[in-house]
Length: 232
Image (cartoon, rainbow, N blue to C red; front, side, top):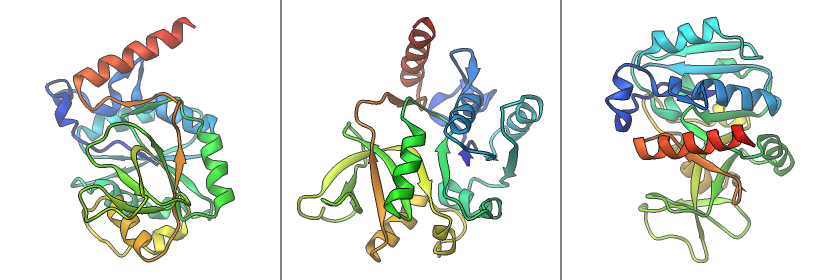
Protein backbone atom coordinates (compact mmCIF):
# COMPACT_ATOMS: atom_id res chain seq x y z
CA UNK A 1 0.00 0.00 0.00
CA UNK A 2 1.22 3.47 -0.89
CA UNK A 3 0.03 6.36 1.26
CA UNK A 4 -0.75 9.24 -1.11
CA UNK A 5 -3.69 11.03 0.50
CA UNK A 6 -1.88 13.87 2.26
CA UNK A 7 -2.19 17.56 1.51
CA UNK A 8 1.53 18.31 1.43
CA UNK A 9 1.09 21.56 3.34
CA UNK A 10 4.81 22.23 3.77
CA UNK A 11 5.24 22.16 -0.02
CA UNK A 12 2.64 24.86 -0.69
CA UNK A 13 2.03 26.61 -3.03
CA UNK A 14 3.24 23.74 -5.26
CA UNK A 15 0.80 21.27 -3.71
CA UNK A 16 -2.15 23.59 -4.14
CA UNK A 17 -2.21 22.58 -7.80
CA UNK A 18 -0.53 19.16 -7.80
CA UNK A 19 -0.68 16.40 -5.19
CA UNK A 20 2.61 15.68 -3.46
CA UNK A 21 2.51 12.11 -4.77
CA UNK A 22 2.74 13.45 -8.34
CA UNK A 23 5.61 15.87 -7.74
CA UNK A 24 8.36 14.83 -10.14
CA UNK A 25 11.81 13.64 -9.17
CA UNK A 26 14.20 12.63 -11.91
CA UNK A 27 11.50 13.15 -14.52
CA UNK A 28 8.96 10.82 -12.90
CA UNK A 29 6.24 11.38 -10.27
CA UNK A 30 7.17 10.17 -6.80
CA UNK A 31 4.21 7.81 -6.82
CA UNK A 32 5.56 6.06 -9.90
CA UNK A 33 9.04 5.77 -8.42
CA UNK A 34 7.65 4.19 -5.24
CA UNK A 35 5.35 1.74 -7.03
CA UNK A 36 8.11 0.61 -9.38
CA UNK A 37 10.47 0.05 -6.45
CA UNK A 38 7.84 -2.00 -4.65
CA UNK A 39 7.21 -4.06 -7.79
CA UNK A 40 10.95 -4.65 -8.18
CA UNK A 41 11.01 -5.92 -4.59
CA UNK A 42 8.30 -8.47 -5.38
CA UNK A 43 4.99 -6.70 -4.81
CA UNK A 44 2.37 -8.20 -7.16
CA UNK A 45 -0.30 -5.57 -6.57
CA UNK A 46 -0.62 -2.12 -5.03
CA UNK A 47 -3.40 -0.09 -3.44
CA UNK A 48 -3.04 3.69 -3.23
CA UNK A 49 -5.10 5.82 -0.87
CA UNK A 50 -6.21 9.23 -2.15
CA UNK A 51 -7.83 12.38 -0.77
CA UNK A 52 -6.14 15.68 -1.66
CA UNK A 53 -6.56 16.33 -5.41
CA UNK A 54 -7.64 12.70 -5.63
CA UNK A 55 -8.85 13.00 -9.22
CA UNK A 56 -5.33 13.83 -10.42
CA UNK A 57 -3.81 10.83 -8.66
CA UNK A 58 -6.50 8.48 -9.88
CA UNK A 59 -6.27 9.77 -13.46
CA UNK A 60 -2.52 9.20 -13.40
CA UNK A 61 -2.98 5.64 -12.14
CA UNK A 62 -5.58 4.88 -14.82
CA UNK A 63 -3.37 6.08 -17.65
CA UNK A 64 0.08 4.76 -16.65
CA UNK A 65 1.25 1.16 -16.84
CA UNK A 66 3.27 0.68 -13.66
CA UNK A 67 3.98 -3.01 -14.05
CA UNK A 68 1.53 -4.25 -11.40
CA UNK A 69 -2.24 -3.98 -10.89
CA UNK A 70 -3.10 -0.83 -8.93
CA UNK A 71 -6.29 -0.24 -6.93
CA UNK A 72 -7.46 2.96 -5.24
CA UNK A 73 -8.89 3.60 -1.77
CA UNK A 74 -10.59 7.01 -1.93
CA UNK A 75 -10.96 8.73 1.45
CA UNK A 76 -13.68 11.30 2.10
CA UNK A 77 -11.59 12.68 4.97
CA UNK A 78 -7.92 12.29 5.82
CA UNK A 79 -7.75 9.12 7.89
CA UNK A 80 -4.02 9.26 8.73
CA UNK A 81 -1.80 6.22 8.28
CA UNK A 82 -3.69 3.86 10.58
CA UNK A 83 -7.16 4.84 9.48
CA UNK A 84 -6.11 4.70 5.83
CA UNK A 85 -4.71 1.20 6.21
CA UNK A 86 -7.78 0.06 8.12
CA UNK A 87 -10.08 1.30 5.35
CA UNK A 88 -8.08 -0.65 2.75
CA UNK A 89 -7.73 -3.81 4.85
CA UNK A 90 -9.91 -5.93 2.55
CA UNK A 91 -7.22 -5.60 -0.13
CA UNK A 92 -4.85 -7.80 1.90
CA UNK A 93 -6.72 -11.09 1.67
CA UNK A 94 -3.91 -13.41 0.58
CA UNK A 95 -2.42 -13.83 4.05
CA UNK A 96 1.00 -12.54 2.98
CA UNK A 97 3.00 -9.72 4.61
CA UNK A 98 2.77 -6.44 2.72
CA UNK A 99 4.57 -3.14 2.40
CA UNK A 100 3.15 0.15 3.65
CA UNK A 101 5.16 2.95 2.01
CA UNK A 102 4.80 6.73 2.13
CA UNK A 103 4.47 8.24 -1.35
CA UNK A 104 6.82 11.09 -0.47
CA UNK A 105 9.74 8.85 0.54
CA UNK A 106 12.70 8.56 -1.83
CA UNK A 107 15.08 5.84 -0.77
CA UNK A 108 17.69 3.38 -1.96
CA UNK A 109 16.85 0.91 0.81
CA UNK A 110 16.97 -2.76 -0.19
CA UNK A 111 13.25 -3.45 0.05
CA UNK A 112 13.52 -7.11 -0.90
CA UNK A 113 16.01 -7.69 1.92
CA UNK A 114 13.72 -5.84 4.32
CA UNK A 115 10.82 -8.10 3.32
CA UNK A 116 12.93 -11.23 3.85
CA UNK A 117 14.07 -9.96 7.25
CA UNK A 118 10.45 -9.49 8.26
CA UNK A 119 9.52 -13.01 7.18
CA UNK A 120 12.47 -14.52 9.01
CA UNK A 121 11.83 -12.64 12.26
CA UNK A 122 8.15 -13.51 12.60
CA UNK A 123 7.43 -9.91 13.61
CA UNK A 124 3.98 -8.40 13.49
CA UNK A 125 5.49 -5.36 11.77
CA UNK A 126 8.99 -4.30 10.69
CA UNK A 127 9.96 -0.63 10.46
CA UNK A 128 12.77 0.83 8.37
CA UNK A 129 14.83 3.03 10.69
CA UNK A 130 18.20 4.74 10.75
CA UNK A 131 20.44 6.69 13.08
CA UNK A 132 19.74 10.27 12.03
CA UNK A 133 18.21 13.44 13.48
CA UNK A 134 14.46 13.36 14.02
CA UNK A 135 11.87 15.31 15.96
CA UNK A 136 10.35 12.08 17.33
CA UNK A 137 12.70 9.15 17.59
CA UNK A 138 11.40 5.66 18.18
CA UNK A 139 13.01 3.62 20.95
CA UNK A 140 14.08 0.02 20.42
CA UNK A 141 15.37 -2.41 23.02
CA UNK A 142 18.54 -4.49 22.74
CA UNK A 143 16.73 -7.21 20.80
CA UNK A 144 15.48 -4.72 18.19
CA UNK A 145 11.88 -4.50 19.38
CA UNK A 146 9.93 -1.24 19.60
CA UNK A 147 9.62 -0.14 23.21
CA UNK A 148 8.67 3.54 23.15
CA UNK A 149 8.73 6.90 21.45
CA UNK A 150 10.42 10.19 22.19
CA UNK A 151 8.10 12.55 24.03
CA UNK A 152 5.91 9.75 25.36
CA UNK A 153 7.19 9.14 28.86
CA UNK A 154 10.64 8.14 30.11
CA UNK A 155 12.62 6.05 27.63
CA UNK A 156 13.45 2.52 28.79
CA UNK A 157 16.98 1.90 30.05
CA UNK A 158 19.52 1.28 27.28
CA UNK A 159 16.88 1.99 24.62
CA UNK A 160 18.29 2.92 21.22
CA UNK A 161 16.71 6.05 19.61
CA UNK A 162 16.26 5.72 15.85
CA UNK A 163 14.38 7.67 13.20
CA UNK A 164 11.55 6.06 11.25
CA UNK A 165 11.91 6.17 7.46
CA UNK A 166 8.27 5.84 6.38
CA UNK A 167 8.48 2.23 5.15
CA UNK A 168 6.87 -0.74 6.92
CA UNK A 169 6.39 -4.44 6.27
CA UNK A 170 3.26 -5.66 8.02
CA UNK A 171 1.92 -9.13 8.72
CA UNK A 172 -1.83 -9.31 8.01
CA UNK A 173 -2.46 -10.52 11.57
CA UNK A 174 -1.91 -6.93 12.67
CA UNK A 175 -5.11 -5.84 10.91
CA UNK A 176 -7.25 -7.95 13.23
CA UNK A 177 -5.49 -6.45 16.24
CA UNK A 178 -6.21 -2.82 15.34
CA UNK A 179 -8.69 -1.71 18.00
CA UNK A 180 -8.28 1.94 17.00
CA UNK A 181 -10.91 3.36 14.66
CA UNK A 182 -11.54 6.49 12.61
CA UNK A 183 -8.63 8.88 12.16
CA UNK A 184 -5.41 7.63 13.77
CA UNK A 185 -1.72 7.14 13.03
CA UNK A 186 -0.47 3.56 12.69
CA UNK A 187 2.24 4.37 15.24
CA UNK A 188 -0.48 4.51 17.91
CA UNK A 189 -1.31 0.90 17.11
CA UNK A 190 2.34 -0.12 17.06
CA UNK A 191 3.08 1.42 20.44
CA UNK A 192 0.00 -0.14 22.02
CA UNK A 193 0.80 -3.57 20.63
CA UNK A 194 4.46 -3.28 21.59
CA UNK A 195 3.33 -2.48 25.14
CA UNK A 196 1.25 -5.66 25.06
CA UNK A 197 4.32 -7.69 24.10
CA UNK A 198 3.90 -7.89 20.32
CA UNK A 199 7.03 -7.93 18.19
CA UNK A 200 7.29 -4.65 16.30
CA UNK A 201 10.86 -4.89 15.04
CA UNK A 202 13.42 -2.61 13.41
CA UNK A 203 15.19 -2.94 10.08
CA UNK A 204 18.34 -0.79 10.17
CA UNK A 205 18.99 1.08 6.94
CA UNK A 206 22.08 3.07 7.94
CA UNK A 207 24.19 3.73 4.86
CA UNK A 208 21.29 3.48 2.39
CA UNK A 209 20.13 6.84 1.05
CA UNK A 210 16.81 8.04 2.46
CA UNK A 211 14.95 11.32 2.31
CA UNK A 212 11.44 12.62 1.85
CA UNK A 213 10.11 15.53 -0.17
CA UNK A 214 8.25 17.06 2.76
CA UNK A 215 9.46 20.61 2.14
CA UNK A 216 11.15 22.63 -0.59
CA UNK A 217 14.68 22.07 0.69
CA UNK A 218 14.23 18.31 0.93
CA UNK A 219 12.65 18.18 -2.52
CA UNK A 220 15.61 20.04 -4.00
CA UNK A 221 18.05 17.67 -2.30
CA UNK A 222 16.19 14.58 -3.52
CA UNK A 223 16.12 15.96 -7.06
CA UNK A 224 19.88 16.48 -6.93
CA UNK A 225 20.35 12.91 -5.74
CA UNK A 226 18.13 11.51 -8.48
CA UNK A 227 19.90 13.59 -11.13
CA UNK A 228 23.27 12.27 -9.94
CA UNK A 229 22.08 8.66 -10.17
CA UNK A 230 20.86 9.21 -13.72
CA UNK A 231 24.36 10.32 -14.66
CA UNK A 232 25.99 7.22 -13.14
